[in-house]
Figure 1 (cartoon, rainbow, N blue to C red):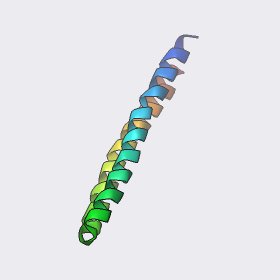
Figure 2 (figure 1 turned 120 degrees about the vertical axis):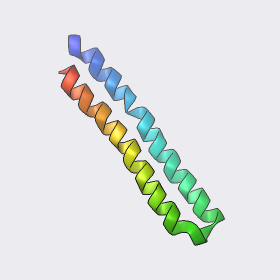
Figure 3 (figure 1 turned 135 degrees about the vertical axis):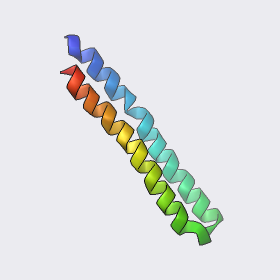
Figure 4 (figure 1 turned 180 degrees about the horizontal axis):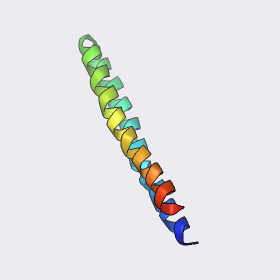
Length: 69
């Protein structure tokens, strides 16, 4: 029972990056709708930001497995 609390904590920590990815995508759509001529640059910036946010989620998930088990 010692590792279960840590696993739940790290699982909850992945909610932040998931919300960040949603906000990044939403703001990218909003920006593209306002200025369609820069959609290529916005897409690249969106993918980079999503990759960093996803990496934080995967680190939280992996830490939960490593330290929770």
